[in-house]
Image 1 (cartoon, rainbow, N blue to C red):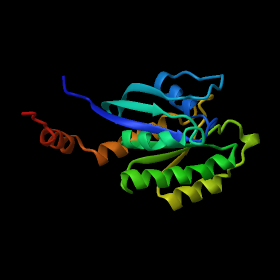
Image 2: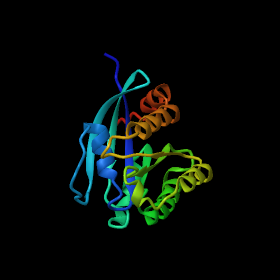
Image 3: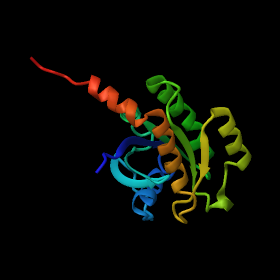
Image 4: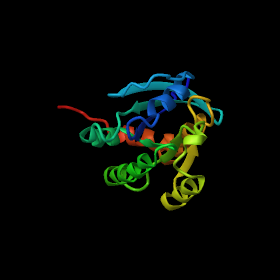
Length: 187
């Protein structure tokens, strides 16, 4: 049986935006009704994306404002990033720009990133307009998705997009060549 591609993804954003709800909905197809601030959770999900099976290790992080010192370690772990904001909290969108720049400083500009606006089912509470979301996608050059973990709307789209980006950025043959070179012999 061939070895599956394995990728490390990190979910980042402000506290309370729905990072865990999004991740658990995609990985386990469950919705978390109660909000419990995340300290740090890791999920290992096997998925079929474009007919190819892969493993996605997902690091679900605490709100960026709560544990800023940990963010650099999270960024080093990641090969791809899901930046999450709430469509009903405009401040959460502004915070993503700082996180995005921190990723660029640590990993460089050529890193797989998708941006996700959550809670699209709460249309009557929406603070971030569709025009703002479209403008963000153009300015940042990243895919931007609107989702609802509660209703399971468009939840798989950002994860599938991120895996496609990581497959392109980290092709299997290049990874295997690099691993062979990284062999360490202790004498």
